[in-house]
Image 1 (cartoon, helix red, strand yellow):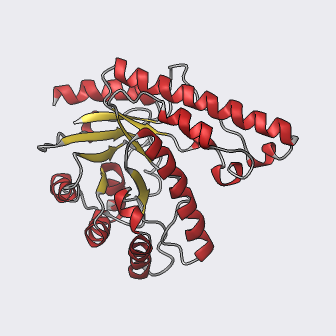
Image 2: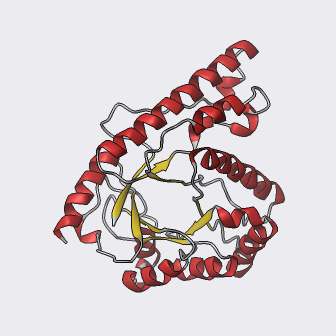
Length: 293
């Protein structure tokens, strides 16, 4: 099991910049172009520094942030982005395993066509970044239930089947309130994409029923969905204020609680995304805890 550093840093002076759409359009066209240029170039440099940090500190996996090009769909109509994509292609990934996790507004199972359309645009942007950096792993949640879980699941399946390029890039993750591991395993097997098992989410999901999920069994089944990949990915986090209710247990703690860690085994490399507020410091502590199990 090898920990993944997720996007940002807690103590290291490695920062990524963003701009809001509102702020961008308060600027003149010349200032707008300058702001976009400076921000993207800064983020390319920060991405290289982040990867260098991982390489130098024995962290073999890194989750790339989504805001390398903030508001891509708007910006692409203001500047030619190809020179910036070339800069991303020049990033030395040093053999570090990379992935991305599009945000909460990427909802491909929405009953609203415009939401699905915008989600696909967002995924296309992530695909462009992934292609530049040489990986194919975009992890998303199923989305909303919208009062009919079976229909919501079917819409996810239908969207993927209508956009077959997604099958080369998507992985699907369980959440705390709506879609458990069994739901995601069903979808993953239906469309042929990997299931990223989130231990914390599954523990939260079953709190109201007083059920403790069998993480070893779920991991074994999730591993089978990664048959076409050279690795397996899972997520781990701990609740900020302990396990109480699904909703209240959602916020992440600064570190991973030692009792939340399980040692899983596979013939493939298992990358563990450490979703903790203290980022690289939490990754270091996780490695120390894991060595003691």
